[in-house]
Image 1 (cartoon, one colour):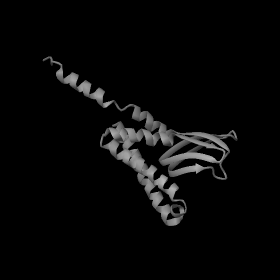
Image 2 (cartoon, helix red, strand yellow):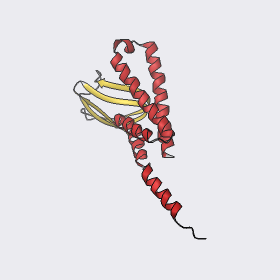
Image 3 (cartoon, one colour):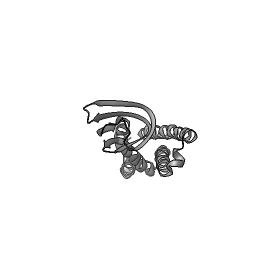
Image 4 (cartoon, helix red, strand yellow):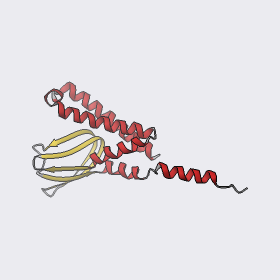
Amino acid sequence: MVRKVVGWLQVFGAGWSALVAVNLLHQTHVFTTDPGFAFLFLVMITLVGVAGVQLLREREVGEILSWIAQLVQLVHVTFGEFAIRVVVGPQLTVLYSSKGVLQFYAGITASLNLLRSDGDPSFSLGINLVALGALLLLMRIPEKSQARRDRGRDAGSPSVA
């Protein structure tokens, strides 16, 4: 059940983000003016989507990719001219800025920021609660080796009639 919840969350997020990327492609020139940034954005969307599909297929690689995808989206930091924010799909982010303001962001988004925008504070630190929740759910997935040992122990134990 846990794999399905996180898997569908990631597939939905990647699908939404892919639609946003296609829309950006038609409306802006970001893909031609900064192809490296665009490539990184598409790699992140693909990572989240592949992680979700592999998790739904109950493959171990899906768990590993899901951990990577969610860890990248977990922390949002702005310092100096840099801003590190990655969101592919749903987010509920709590952000504390150097201005002493606590802000909340919620929604479905596709975002990759590496540089601070004009309106951003010089320092902020935030956490994406959706990514945190996904990571907590991923922690509940039992190890395959432990599940195999448990099945083998149950199959070898005599039954009492």
